[in-house]
Structures are given as C-alpha cells and as structure tokens.
Image (cartoon, rainbow, N blue to C red):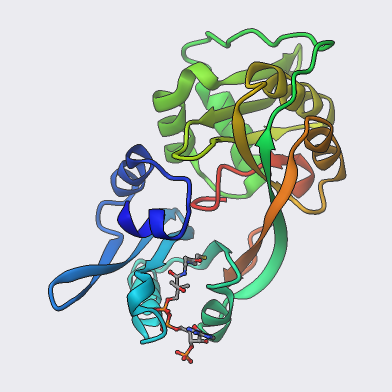
Amino acid sequence: MRLKDQAGWNQVNRDWQRLFDLQPDGCFVAEFDGRPVGTVVTCRFEQVAWVAMMLVDEAYRGQGIGRKLMTRAIEELDRHEIRSIRLDATPFGQPLYESLGFAPESTLIRFAGILSPVVENEAIPAWNQPGREHELLALDREVTGTDRGALIARLFAEHGESLRVVETDQGVKGFLMSRPGSNSRQIGPCIADETAGRRLLADAGRRYAGEPVVIDIPSSHDQAIEIVEALGLKPLRQLLRMGRGPRVIEDLSRLWASAGPEKG
Ligand SMILES: CC(C)(COP(=O)(O)OP(=O)(O)OC[C@H]1O[C@@H](n2cnc3c(N)ncnc32)[C@H](O)[C@@H]1OP(=O)(O)O)[C@@H](O)C(=O)NCCC(=O)NCCS
C-alpha cells in the first residue's frame, strides 16, 4: 500500500488481497537490505497471464530492480508454459517492457472526474439470478478471449451489489460492475453489446452521480467515450496494452470499460 500510494494509484487493501488470492504462488516482492522496495503480481488464466502492480519505491528506481522483478515474473510464467503475457502499461513501464519483448497492442484512456447527475434514463434493477453467473462469465470469455472466470466470480462475490445486467429473450447482452478505490470508484468491467453498453454506462452515471470515479476505456471506443464525456468525465492518462507471445484476440468494441489495469 505504501508503494501504490507513492505512485498515486487507486487500489485498496481488498484489491491487493484479491490479487494474492487469485495467484498465491505468483506474487513477488523485491527487498533491499531486508526492506520491501518493489512488487509485481502475475495471474494465470489457462494460456494467458496478466502482470500487474509493478511498483518500485521512488528512492530505489533506475537501479535495475524493476527489470529484476519483471524478469522473475516472466520466468515464473514461462515455467507454467503460459503462451501470452499481457499488461496495461504506464509510460514509466513501457520502455522496460519493450526491452523484455512486449509489443504494443492497443491503448486505453483513463477517464476521471465527478459524475454529473443524469435525469432522463431508466434505472436498471439489481440482478438477482443465483445460478446464472456462468452466463456473465461466458460473455466475458467471448469478448476478452480469456477465461477470466475466477476474476469475474471473485468481483461478483465481493461487489455483487454493484452488478447490473442487461438481457433479452436471447440471453445476457451485457453487464457492469464497480468497486470503491482509495481515491475514486473504479467503474468496470463493462462488457456489452452496443445497446446494452449504452444503458449500462448511463445507469452507472445515474447511480454514482456526485461521486469521484475512474473508468478505463479502449481509445477506439467512440460510443463509450462520448457517454462518459457527457457525464462530465475528462481524460486523465493513457495506458498502453502490451503483449508478449501470440496475440490474444479480444473484441474491443464490446469492452466498454476494462476491469482495471491489473487484469484488463
Ligand atoms: C516502472 C518502474 C517499476 C521501473 O522500475 P525501476 O526499478 O526504476 O526500473 P529499472 O531500474 O529496472 O529500469 C528498467 C528500464 O527502465 C528504463 N528506465 C529506468 N529508469 C529510467 C530513467 N530514470 N530514465 C529513463 N529510463 C529509465 C530503462 O529503460 C531501464 O532499462 P535498462 O535496464 O536498460 O537501464 C518504476 O518506475 C515505477 O514503480 N514507476 C511507477 C509505477 C508504474 O508506473 N509502474 C509501471 C506500471 S505498468
């Protein structure tokens, strides 16, 4: 928490706990004279892994600690024969990741601000359909090209009250979850087709009006960007989605908001 506060990041204890629980054997700390000065976490989803929380204490940067942490993470993932390693990079991390074989794939924009109240949209009721969570997991897998079931189920268990779902006679068309952060509520993931995505974002705008929020949106997603700008959010920074190994095919047109930079 000290390192992530130094970097001005938004995670809370519970976010760290989720990362540890999802991959207890995949999280590493760098120590300097016995003092923790750096972190990295990995998470394996079958053939795909995400790397996150690459943080080095400001006082110890530029000495190769970040490189050692990332090399250790890659070694561990290679040992598990993971084919594709992915991450959402800040500009600080990008040169290091490029030098370790990661290639840029797409960009996301973090929008931030206080949501302005919207009046004229219809509220989506809470979804209380025990036993149907697998339908959300299946949609998530189809859109992200990754079996993130463990992540989505965990977010649902922790923040089920935030879940909203749009469905038709043909089944689930989209869902959205959110969670509190140390500075702002993180809205996402939001995985949906066009009609459902519009409704879900507008509904989140209504529910969280007046609250500070952040939301990470693919920069190619014009409709999502138009909606959050109309809700009063402004671009804060850019994230570069990078991959090492075979490219994972994802449908960015149905990724209205990522789950956050830790897992895309
Ligand atoms: C990104 C971060 C983890 C790198 O840690 P670090 O210990 O400073 O990294 P290293 O010393 O191993 O440097 C790795 C590479 O980064 C680049 N680099 C590091 N410090 C740099 C500096 N001051 N100026 C320019 N490039 C620099 C170099 O390319 C270096 O490559 P080299 O090994 O060939 O010299 C660290 O800057 C950090 O915690 N930043 C804030 C949080 C963040 O943005 N994390 C990345 C999330 S994706």
